[in-house]
Image (tube, rainbow, N blue to C red):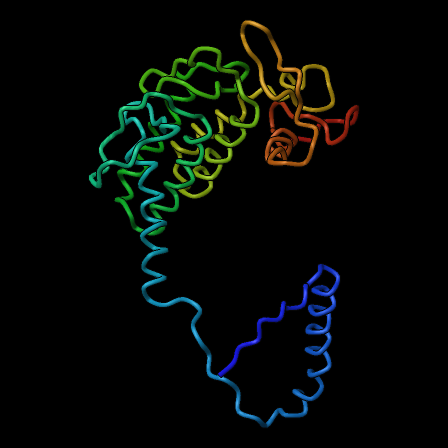
Length: 258
């Protein structure tokens, strides 16, 4: 038996595009023929995911949700920005930096945990109320905006940390999610007060777009949320505020939502 040692033809981007285009067009050309063969037996439905795949995804979702319970301080509800994964028992990590964004994600994760039955509903609602109450009544803020990182047990901002417009928005998305999901009078009251307290025009700092943040020592950060990104939540929350909205367009009346 002999083997060819000739060099295979070089595939360029142009030739690859032609091959791909030909494959697509051949598929279109075959469609009428397939339509004429309606009497042919249809292939049996094939599952894309096995039972093992589904079990893995379920466990990954459960573990992801439990992070926001296991790594939340029980007295403040603040969630650690990160934690090491050295044990399987879920004890509280030794890190001390909480993130206002992680806490917001945690509030949404608590809704998922309740829906999926990962934890007892009473325990979940207790954590939600603790979190909302602490952030409304004891967590340092500026015009309703929160510092990006803080001490997980005290809520005090870490050194050189800014008051963050976008991370506050992420937190408020979680706040409004638990308000809508639980439909509980106490949760509704606390969540509504947190949302209504935010002075959105203050973070505009006289401009047409939001500043990325503010520092006590130097004032507003010069960079702004003026390009398409996760900023959409920030502007929608601000436009919809029933107390301190921003206008849809600069100079227009501020609509607000009930």
